[in-house]
Amino acid sequence: MKILLIEDEKTLSNIICKGLKKLSYAIDSAFDGEEGLDLFYINNYDLIILDINLPKLDGFEVLKEIRKINKEIKIIILSAKNMVQDKVLGLDLGANDYLEKPFDFLELEARIRNLLRWEFVKNDNIINIGCLKIDTIKKQVFIDNEEVSLTNKEYGILEYLALNKDRFILAEEIIEHVWESDFDLFSNTFKFHIYSLKKKLNKDGIIKNTRGKGYIICEV
Image (cartoon, rainbow, N blue to C red; front, side):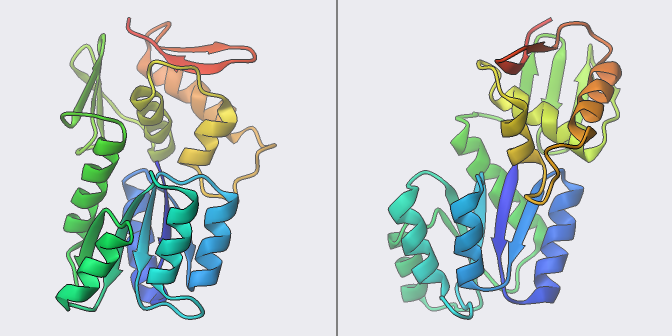
C-alpha cells in the first residue's frame, strides 16, 4: 500500500516514514501544502496522512482540493489543534479520521489499517486464499500453516495482489502501490522480487502472470 505523508515537522515526518516503511508501506513525503498537492496530482495513493498547520497552503485547503478530484481516497488529519471546531471542519471537508498530536505510532498504524480495510471491504485482518493465509496486522504469511519469511517489498506485493485477488494487475500498478515514487520503472528490481516471492511461497500457481494482462493471485 502506498501512502502520502504531508507533514512540515521533519523530525516527526522521518519517524513516521521510518516506522511505516518497516511495516511494508511505500511512503512519499512532502513538507508543505503545495508540494503535497503536486505529489497527489501525479501519483496514485491508497491513503494520505495530512497535517493541518502547513506552510504555503494549509491542510484544510489541501483537503478541499483533494476532495474536488478524488472522493474515495482515505485521509487522516494530524494536528496539534485540539479544538472541537477544527475536528468538525476537517471531517466536514472530507477527512476520514482525525488524530491529535502528540500521538502514539501504534494508534496511527491501527487507524491506517482500519481505513484500508474499509477501502477493500475486508471484515477481518486475516486473508485466506486456498493454502495461503495473510495476517495483515502482524504482517505474517503462512502456506499450509507454515510461516514464510518475506522481505518488506515481497510482503507488499503479495498483500496488494491478495487484496485485489479477483483481477489481473499490471506490474506498473503494483509498483505504484508498493514502491516510492522515485522508483526506476526500467530496473529489474520488480522482476527479482516477484521471482523471489514465488520461490519462497514454494507453490506453483499461487501467483500467475499472463502477458498483456499482468499478475493475479489464485487459490491452490
